[in-house]
Length: 217
Image (tube, rainbow, N blue to C red; front, side):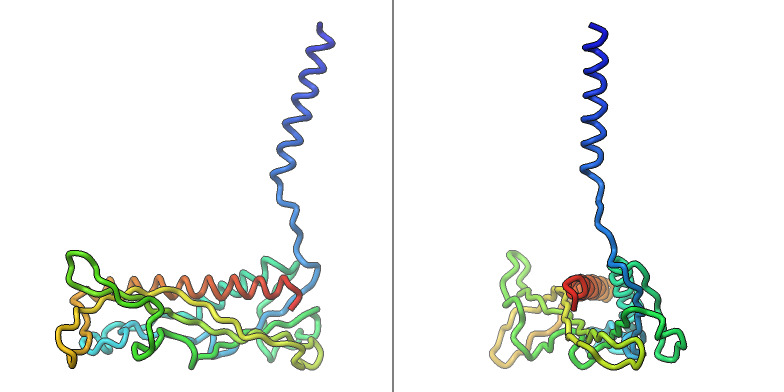
């Protein structure tokens, strides 16, 4: 009887330890050292928070998009490769790495979609409020380049676009010649919605670049 009890506890101990091992993430980083470079335009990229609304023009301030974007991109690279170091193109140690990845912003393609273009989500009634609602996309477009560590020559490049959803509301159009005018939504609420869209776009473009790098680029 004692022998059977001992065997039972040994089996139980083995089963518990086996189940614990199954939950461990054994994913390893790519055994390479990578130097990460950011263009000056990317790091200094700012977005005006006025949202193009005349009454708020010049009062909304700016979002420091480039700072958050560069942090997110570097964290993504660091999650893949064994060693990741941020450098600039004047760094004398540039030839000591296995790969060099440079990120640049395509500023003319970033920001909210132009109101003149067809919205991603068409206007639709909000019951009981007398307003139409639609959403625009906030775009972030990043050029990702793989460079030779010795001569900084281009090996491969890819343009990656991320976006976030910015929901806006407009008054019901009463006359054919009456343009959609802004609602009386508070500036803080408009800024919060834009900030959320920017964060979504940063996460989206970072996730896509991580997938690109994991695929071997």
